[in-house]
Length: 160
Image 1: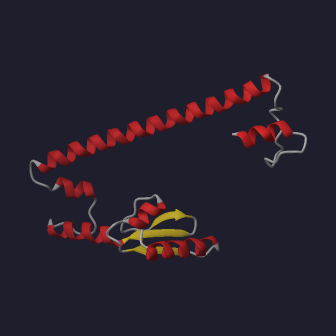
Image 2 (image 1 turned 135 degrees about the horizontal axis):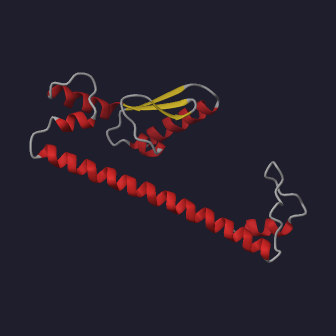
Image 3 (image 1 turned 180 degrees about the vertical axis):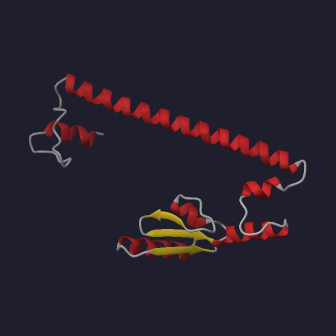
């Protein structure tokens, strides 16, 4: 990300935190704004947070131009563009799309499995600490604060 993009993003984020509606527009062909925000941007505004939207015009203009060249109107989806490609490209696009969807599904399953393992590990650690009498498992109050009586729990929190 170049300094100008970083400055624009910082300014937009600050103004959106002040409850101002902000639309940040990128024309960067490197797509650094979307990368910095951790979202895939398109030619339509994408909600990044409650009062911050972002749009990337370069990609949208390229897709729209490609669609026009192929006789499509508006902004076609990549699936529509791939459907118009001649053999053998149509099959290659379809095969890559299936592989990408399978990989995305596998990553999603692994993420869920890892989250489950982390939750089980966290629960097992808490139960082990309770079993050896090191902490009172109900030491946090309703606000999530530590009362002064829970010195052992605070030491465990700092160690973790």
